[in-house]
Length: 302
Image 1 (cartoon, rainbow, N blue to C red):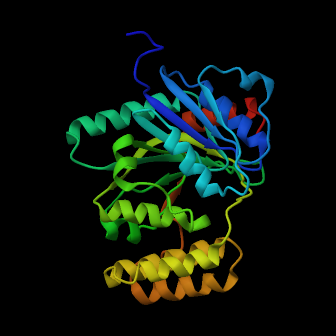
Image 2: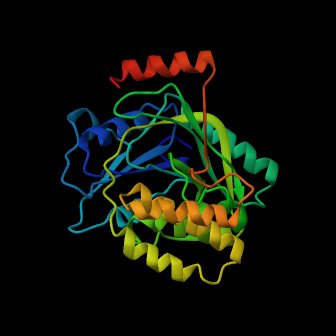
């Protein structure tokens, strides 16, 4: 079987957003990964055009824009077009570190081999956050979670940074609900959690997260839909989810939601740590990793 006819290993889905510069960085970072039999799917829901050096990539597929298409609908369209055994879906601002996908695929495949396919996994990795175009010298590492209590309790309702999952995960969980706009991933991950999915935290650092101009909208309407949808969940899980939802709203300009979040968190877990974060641990990388990251960021113009 030749490379042209071999089954695709991985589909990389990149919604192009309204930032052509970030889109180009994301595509280049994907194209340079040392993996065979991959495809890169760019969902061009804006009018951004590809730079000449990217337009000729043989494994790049650009889905034309659709008028009025939301960010969530663009993600769905990209995932529906994907043909790989594995999918990785970018968020706005995700840029892959060199060689990171090969490490992540090997980690995920070995994890599945040991589990003998009994678990429905989605894999997240650590990432390098940039603030105002600068790196503060820290990395962020997601925590793993299992089931509804795990996802809700650790704030991992919608973990970020280039999610990696086998096709079976998408087949089981289905599409994102595009009526929920910016909160669609909360619903998507909880649907996965209710079906017994595991969030697996790969210890590697695989992504640089650039500052984003989030194009999602409709938070208040979507939040009300989710509150009603979660009414039948166990009380403890629902309380945690509502606290996380308030925090998500606070991050997007709803100042009163921050106070509600703190009140819910303290009322539900008065003796435990307040769920004031996203479930992502901040840490300092090793000297070797820090030097490598600094070199990459400098050479990439960050």
